[in-house]
View 1 (cartoon, rainbow, N blue to C red):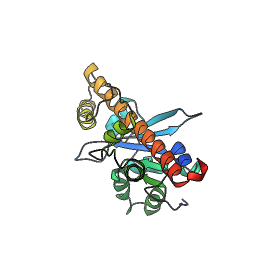
View 2: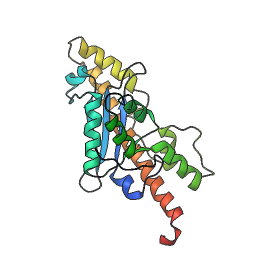
View 3: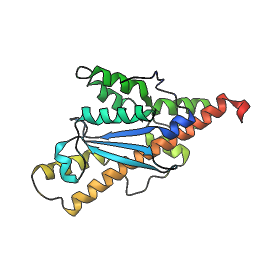
View 4: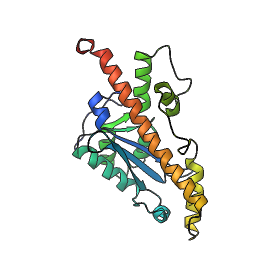
Length: 218
């Protein structure tokens, strides 16, 4: 897989619009169970594609892939369309780096296209919003800064509990109850809005940084 050089804290406005935005969900004690990837479809409307990384979640009607295969598909898609891969912080990058002994070429290809959205947001905050800084470094704090509204049906802090409850139920061979389905839907919507909100922050940051660095084009 050919690679490109990358700065993990920089995105051009066009790269931000075309990038793949990813978010993994899981519990603190295990490899992630779900990978959500948001990309722009036809026109400007983005959509999320979900892949289950835990075989048990086949019962939730998702395609199941190993983490290695999911990242391989992601990198191939990014290379085919020359897109960057964006995540909030280095969590996803650190997970991919656990594959280095198994597939160093894949890890290098991922690293070459990776962008840390939090690092980009910090650059933007320091360059363009020195007097209006989020108190913390969470995505939700930057969403508040740009006025991005997350619906009540996509709440924060639901992922780990939903995954534990749903995987336990499916592993027992029993059908999901309406309560389980509600938790699962809220998890997917949370993941969707994490990806979409991250994209909104990156679009705003990339546009304003570019304008600040190229005043002659204003």
